[in-house]
Image 1 (cartoon, protein in one colour):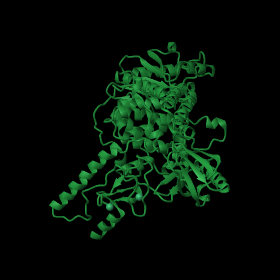
Image 2 (cartoon, rainbow, N blue to C red):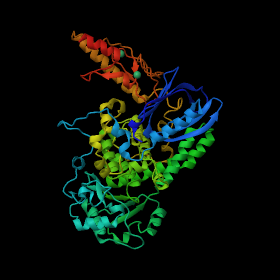
Image 3 (cartoon, rainbow, N blue to C red):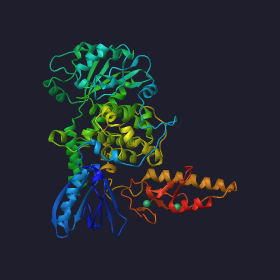
Image 4 (tube, protein in one colour):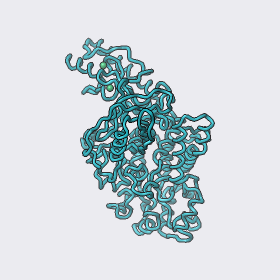
Length: 612
Ligand SMILES: [Zn+2]
Ligand SMILES: [Zn+2]
């Protein structure tokens, strides 16, 4: 169903049931719009907006004395239960929501019909959609003469899940590349993704070889040797298979498997115990279960333990640290899993975050996602379930691999709070938008898909949204310090459940004040006051009177906009201070002045306009 086919409907007298059941329900009106489901409470300013792309399941829970229950669970772990007074209304709502959230073709998702535009211009005036320019990025890494850009995959002819431009050792011939690509699962042959400038060590990624029990490929063996030779250190090349050895053995039966080191010179083989997408999916289901119920502590801890989620996170970082340490010692690494898009994307990007401070900046992190996730063909459509599964095989493709990567980054941020330019909100919103289909950034299964969909001309980029609200995503404590985070701790106690993600919408679980926002707000406040003093000293009048006292963040649960008053959904909703009156507003009620100097509420903006 297309969104423009649905007219806006309202259902009154709907109750929003308290999740834990300890507080009374909210009575309100439900609005079913073309893009969102909105609940507005009658007596308070509570408002809940849910983009249809985020809805995972809708379930009828049956009748109670006060109405018919409908449960809605979202992919970003927001879960609500509604009580609809009449059975007929409940059934209609259920059917409408089923239709709204069902997406059979990615072309019908909200990103393509959305009208707002965000502009982000490059210095030459052209629109910038992606953060990645392959040439510029490899230049930044310091890739020199030994690695060369190749048109081997021109028009995606050799491998449709890879980028068009690939970098190989300069001496690699086309025949060699062709041989190797035929020997690798889905033609995903070894290609460069990171170059460690200081010692020429290279990070190369690929898919498993089609060895079966005895097959070998001379071209592949020579290519690997060229990768080994490229850094000139004489240290053996590390072949990192991220899978447990048993899984890799099972693949041999299907004619796939792993390299036989006897056929490769100067290579050392290493297995890691990172489980497959199915194990990760059921692991996260258990974790979410534990986080969403009111359980006794012992029961909660038991489920967290049996989910294995923290163990899986540790495995990921263990492997990433191994790769980063090897590269920093001048040892080149070739990394693969089965098809080289899930575990490989996770581990190579985490190791680059450990190695290169650029990837710990906002722009660098976006570039990394553009390169190792979007560029090298992580299947966002399939893994995030963008399109409704029409059969069981498709639903088995859904797995929280990307969320798990962000969780691992969060664990690193906890350990290294000064080394990341971005904050927790940045990770949470990336995760939300990987599922929501409001921006075009994460649509499609590979680079070619996004070209075919023409996302860069038909949709908005999430990165440009961030660019326009950078203050909301900055870590105020960031200091450009360490280069390589070699001392990152992977002992069991270093891992914890990410409550900001799994309990984002639960009151009382998050601290009462967001520490990042508190620091950023104080800095902003000082700047505003200093500027006002400056102007007064120069004898210039202020366009708007500046209140030296700002409303405290603590206890600021709703917007002070007279016609708005919207309640903030969670601690991660940014509270914006008006630079004039000093009150707190939601993002809809605050405007930045044309000269980008001040953020003002509607009434202060009017005063400012009059005084000009
Ligand atoms: Zn104001
Ligand atoms: Zn507001």
